[in-house]
Image (tube, rainbow, N blue to C red; front, side, top):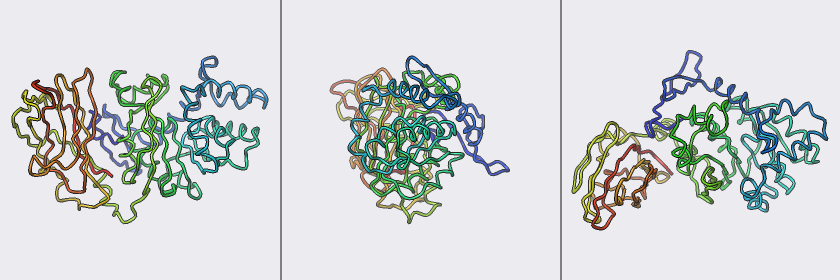
Amino acid sequence: MGVSLLFGFARSRRRSSRGEAHLHTEHGKAIDSSTFLDASREKWREVPGGDTLGRVYSTDMLSASASDLQAQWDEMNRASSAPSHRGWYQEMYREFMAGKHVVEVGSGLGFDGIYFMRLGAHWTFCDIVKDNLAIVRRMVDLAGLSDRASYLWIEHPESLETLPGKFDVIWANGSLHHAPFEIAQKEARILLGKLKPRGRWVELFYPYERWLRQGKLPFSEWGKYTDGERTPWAEWHDAERIKQRLFPAVTTTVLDYRFGGGQYGWLDLRIDRPIIADLPSSELQERLRTYNILGCNRKNLNGKFKPQGPALAFDCTGKMWSYAAAIDLKDLAIFGRLPARPDFIWAADLEVSLRAGAAGFVLTGDDLNKFVGREVMLDAGLSTQRLTIKTDGPELPRYLLIRNGAFETTSSGMLESGVIRSGT
């Protein structure tokens, strides 16, 4: 899923004789999108029934009478609508959603949609499981809300192209992180074309820190840990990764929030420009690439770099703000291949383990004293930390600089991964 060389999940894409896009997992096993969607459909017809019901199959629920189905749905809805789970955001968005036209990707049994429809929203339920949609349709009819509901079965990502009109909100409550990045990215690009300018993109995801706590498992295995044995996939996300998936849309962050003891993340973005119409497709494909920077030339300054396998160990002197070392970016293939455009900036995504002290990370021009973006400072911690540093403008940076941020303390750590990419 578009993780490129960052975070150790190196996957490439190829085309079969049938023209299907394949994803290569970290184990080299290729899967195509149709195979993955079939596995996902088999999993996600299994829906959470709360603490008393456990997990149940939507196929089995369809055979229930109207009264029994209503009772079962109500119990499941109550179990998932506690203030610490759905309740907090349902309360927060209740006034905002009135009159809005919303597309929900991965609607499940329709708990959110029916809640907000009762408050005046118009809702389009989209799901990969037909039986889930059949239940939602029955519940919407029982609630007397049919005139404000639409339905779409996602047979494949291109199915989203049939959505009519323009929408105010894209709502993805815990769905897109269960697909490899390229599949979710394809869906996201289609959905962005259906969104009004300054519309909202709202998404629940599993955070990077949760993935770290739970053992940095391969994504094909992590889903089994988070959502049960039959789950084919789960990826961590954060604001920057979601923005990378939505690239080149121009966004403003409304809310970036963690809840459930750090188990869940919530991102609400305003999409200021969903589409940059004058961007040639060849340039877009080039800007979607990420470039590994750990193999670039390095400069030891008052500290030093030392390769350790694919990572780079670094040490800073004890003098505060002393420049330790820098990575020279000038030989990256990206140089000279892309024009400077005011719509775009440059971003470096890093994974850092800092054992002692504190260190600052910043992008600079040819002059190491000319910072071309804001420095990010990290304190030593027990686990790997992820950070993104950005430029202030469209010009390519020359160096990634690391410097000491601790007073009279030698700082040291490991740059475990790093890529540079185009951003907005």
